Length: 197
Figure 1 (tube, rainbow, N blue to C red):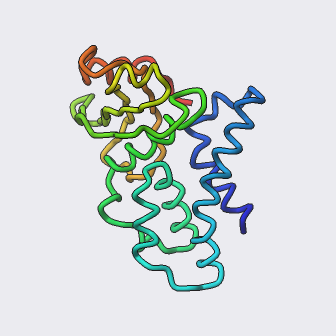
Figure 2: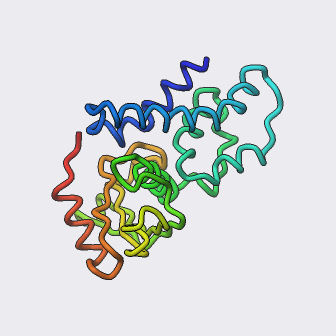
């Protein structure tokens, strides 16, 4: 079952990192990245396997970590326990936040979770048929990120039929500082330049 959980984690994060898997260094970093997340979810998986009681606090504690939410959602779905997923985190906004944090953790991007992340706005495109979530985030490391303080990240598009943890087609940040470009301009750039794979 550990291998099955690893497959679920890889599928969840693969949408975010597929274009970077050609380089050995990146593959190795990615493997460590996945293994770290697997370790964080392993105790919960073992409880499900042995049919032990799982407390609400165990699930809430894991769901507070944005980068774990997509994998936690998939794990609960695999065990037919989605009813345990906290409703406060079952929104497209929280799903978008989770995917952006996961993307930022990747070694070729920020290389870590942001220290802070907040929703700036939601931008509707195509007469409201799709929308993007625009976040601001900050990180003390690396030094170039600390100098910028708050940067912009974009996730979407979400359509009316989207579920919170559907993998978005576009997750991106050019690491522009907040105030150097409007959220609408950044969404327009991402929508027009980051192509679906």
